[in-house]
Length: 330
Image (cartoon, rainbow, N blue to C red):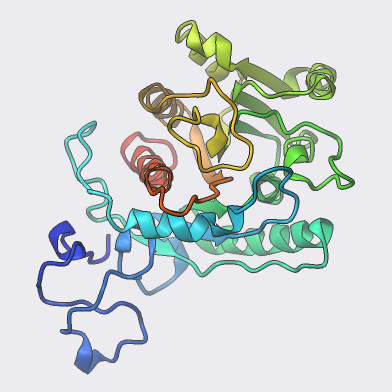
């Protein structure tokens, strides 16, 4: 990983400085600049994007939220919180970030002509980013959940066939359309069933229309309910059996119980907990090739920092599992 300040330095201790970004002239690099506004506070590497281990793509798009708003501020809040994550990981007795090259791209600002044109623009842009990234692990930061469909479609096209989508979510997002648009956050998974098999985990806020859509999709849609998860960990086997060899992970933070994640537009009681979720995700990364991921629907609450930190730590764990647990990590 490129140079990053020691955590003590990040919290204000005096130490030799490092440049906050490429705009700092070489003759001023020794001044005590703040941590860069990148994931984990890492200095940006130079060179081709495909030489990175991971690429962070912020997409602060918000147009179809149906209750609480604020997801457009999610990527920035997550990146800011990530600058203060401790890099040591007790699960692996290592600092997985050491030697890991993480590139943080500028935020994509999509057209405001409407959800349809914005999603078309995103699919083209995401495909170009993914092609440039090669085998690097692309993690998109949202923004609302509608942005997942264009990324999934682009990854399916790159793979040359159907892929599996692991959807960690309180909601199925299988409505044909919602509030007048088929490109709603509530329709994200309905937009990908023709190119992907979707395994949704953590569901507890679902309409009858979506249950019927899942049944009609047959093997293309698997629903894992939150109450089943609360009864034990047998659900993990059912989820894993439904996943194919190539997986795109989409993680709506409302998957978590609101006691852990209040900062989201459509919270639902009875959600996932941290350690069970990590045990499951590790098994996925150990047994499948996870080609890309997104973390969406973080809607920061002013003065409440813990959910932002949770989302940032989740992304760090995804990067850690991709690097430490096999799969297609470079």
